[in-house]
Length: 199
Image (tube, rainbow, N blue to C red; front, side, top):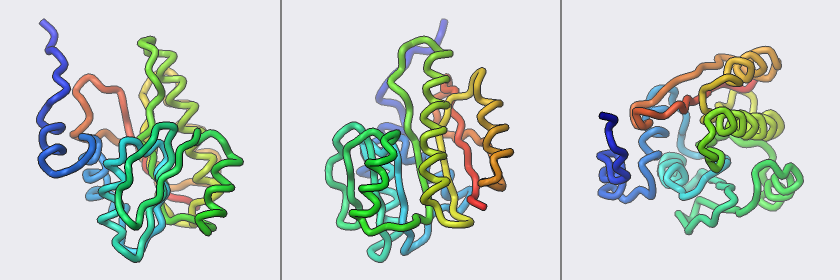
């Protein structure tokens, strides 16, 4: 008999106890420990940032001298003085450009994205939408990430995944491209994180 899904799992309870907005924070923690993504004073761009647990963690990691910018279609409650949030579609290139100009940001040190599409229940469709969002994040990172800066993107593994990975590796913009799973992902999840450095 398949195991029933319980929203209030151990990771969720741990997040609530520690003051984080979502269990997904532990995914970023693990990735940070593994790849040393975050440092004090960094400028970080988080695409698909709601409800804000990655913003919370990044805010603490970059400290007062750093800054974190979050973008999502959903509203995000205020996080900290060093975090600014914006509500619009991350695929809107013009909005991204205008926002970064208003924030007086030229290039960022790190691009994060834990974004997922609104699921339809059709695995192939959801996976394709996930890959499309990954391409949108990559486009932003290609334009606005500093040389040697990390880009981290969640994507659903499926029929289009290998082609996406091949495109990234052959595009010429990225090096040290890795696909990795994290412990805090749900057992049944097909999500994988792509971690790469800007050339």
